Length: 185
Image (cartoon, rainbow, N blue to C red):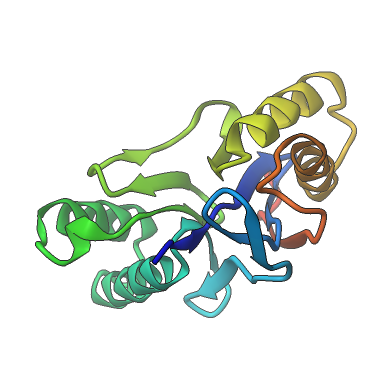
C-alpha cells in the first residue's frame, strides 16, 4: 500500500515575528490527492513552540509526541529537546524507520530536524521542508531580500502561494501560525 504524504511547510523569522505555514494537501503516490485540508502545524508547550511536519502523517505525529516528551523532560528547552529527538530518531530501531521531517520554532530558534540525526539552524532565518520546500524557500529568500516591508506572515503566505502555483504536491489551502518576539530595545 502506498503511503499518504507530500506537503510544503515554511517558517520565516522577520522583524521580531515568527510565522510558520503549511499547505493542506495529502497525496498518495504520484497521482491521487486524498485530502486537501490536512493540518500540518501544531503548538506545543502552551503555544510557545510551533511545529510543522512533512512526510507520513502517522510518522510525523509520532515524532511530535516524542518531541513533546523531550520538551517536558528538558523544561521546554527546545534546542536540547530537538537534539535529543534527533539522536533517538537516528539510533532507535523503531524511530529510524519513520519517514518525516519537522520544523521546530520558538521565540529564539528556528530548527529543521531530520531522521538522519540533523538539527539544522537554516540561513536567512527561513526553513522549508516537504515536496514544495525548495519552491517556498526560493520565494521566501526573494521576498525577504526585495520586500523587507512585508510582515513574516505575509511572506509565508506569498511564498506558499508561489509554491502551490509551481509544485503539484502543494495546494492553496494554507494554514499559518505565528509568534511575536519580544521587542528589542
